[in-house]
Amino acid sequence: MRIGSNIASLQAERQLSTIMKALSRSVERLASGHRTLSARDNAASIAIASRLTSTLRGTTQALLNINQGQALLYTADGALAAQQDITQRIRELAARASNGTLSSQDRVILNDEFQRLLDEIDQIAKTTRFNGIHPLEKNGTTLKIQVGADKFNTITLNTPDSLLTTVFDADIDETTLSYGGFYDPTVNIATDTSNLGTYPFGSAVGDLDNDGDLDYIYNSRDEALNYIYLNNGSGTFSLGSTYSAVNTVRFWDFKIADVDGDGDKDIVSIDSSATGDFQVKFNNGSGTFSTTTTLSTSIGSGGRRTLQLGDVDNDGDIDAMVNRQSGEIGILLNNGSGVFALSTSFNTGGDSRPMRVGDFDGDGNLDIATALIDTNILAFYFGNGSGSFSVGTTIAGFSGQLAVGDVNNDGRDDLVFGNISTVLGRADRALTTSAGGLFNGVNSNDLDLFDFNNDGILDIGGLQTSTSELEILLGIGDGTFSGLTTFGFVGGPQRFNSGDFNMDGQVDFIVQTNTVDGLAIATSHAIATTLTTSQLQNLHILTQESAEAVLGILPTIFDSLNSKRAQIGSQLSRLESAANSAGILRENLSAAKSSIEDLDFVEELAEFTRLKILSDVAQAVLAQANLQRKLVLELLKS
Image (cartoon, rainbow, N blue to C red; front, side, top):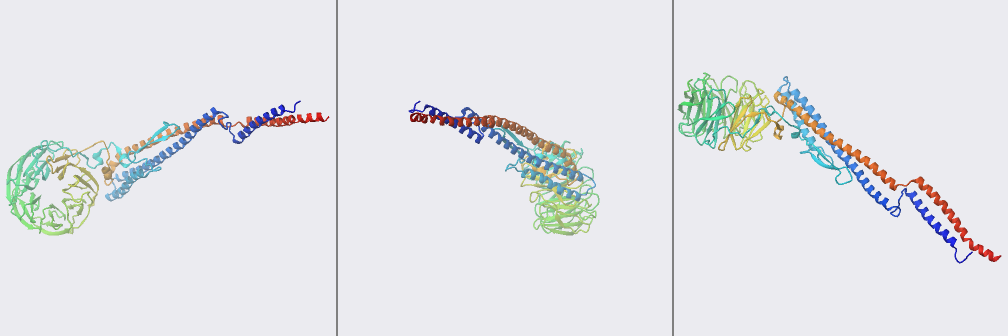
């Protein structure tokens, strides 16, 4: 036994220190629940667990991204569903407006809701929003959804455009929809336009060669020539002949009518000579003209004149009314063979060249309406049936051009002027003006009435020189107009004529512009197209025909919305699959990470118990080892 060194105590102390360190780590593992506490425990496991943690957290965020993408698509789908509901209601309104038992006023009420619903389709598309994103606006929305933890783990979402112009994207018979046709304003009416003048000053249409087609006469002011174009039967025209005024001066106005009773349409004109020569060229039946009669009217003063034709003395012959710049109106009576004589004249009190004739009081006698352009006054002169007239109503506030027709189907002619005011004919001759509708322009350069949509009600067209457009308002049947349709033309349009030039039952137009080669024919035809914004603005159910046209396109509209919802649905399905995949990956990553990091408490508790016992044993052994020196002392004492 040695007392210099206690080797047994040192050994027991070392073992106890090792056991206590192991016991301390076990307690730390039990307290944290982690298998590895630092890189010294298992460096490889720590690296693997770190990578797994990064992927797991990225995958968890990807699941949140997918949920947000789904929320955006559900938002868009809900808006599309609302648009579908609106379209169903539009179908109900159109079906009701297509019923022949409804009055025009009934359809006006239905059309008000119809227009508001169209606006709401657009409003839904424009205001649908998800976190500042407008998924249904123009061209839709394209965005990437990060569906995984790595760079290229993305899904591209495309939401559809559901604006009104896109929803109404279909093959449409525009002949029906646009109430008269799709008009191509770029086709020249003539095969040879090299000799056309540069300023149109009048035109007329009628069957000049008795072949059943509407032909066309055009007046070139600067050349003092009238060009006659004969219709080939399909809306194409060939130059037939030209003729000039007797005095080779400007034609101020001309009309066509059968003035000699032979069944052929003759040409009646007034020129700009000092005597105001009144001329008749007689048609030989083939669209060529030979004999000319001339009458020097010598009424009033001033160069500019206007001309109107009509049977003012009820003898069955076409008479003439000439209006001169000084305000003098001359009545020229026809003897039945195309020979005219000045019967009477009267002064309107000012420049009243805008002049029209019609039976405004319904008494069977033609009346005269004229406008005093210096004082903006409309003046009416009522015919007595013998070629003389009495002064009638005057109305202040005139502007623009004049057009005459029965716009409220009461059997009396009405007057339309400006932008747009209506004077409805009355048996008591107490004429007043009322608002009729509104063009885009201020005043029209030319104004005419025709049945654009074949509903038996006169519609009105006006040329807007400032915008180079022909604008059309549909008649309601009560003297008011709505449903603006516009057609653009190259050059400044000056005059236009309407008629069925290609024999398809639809209204066509010939427009004269102030450019060389400035004649364009616009014929109606069906075309597969996407509705433009302006056309959608003109869509309505104010007539039975237009309501039926709306019913015709609605199935395609439903298909369009169904297709857009299907597009949303397919992407929702893909995101759902991506979410399932990411969820499974997250589970597997969590399991793998847990197998590396998480503590097995049963195993660790067993180890902890073992170390605790060893600790107790080591402490006891150390105590015994320290007692060895006391034994040496006891030996010495004894």
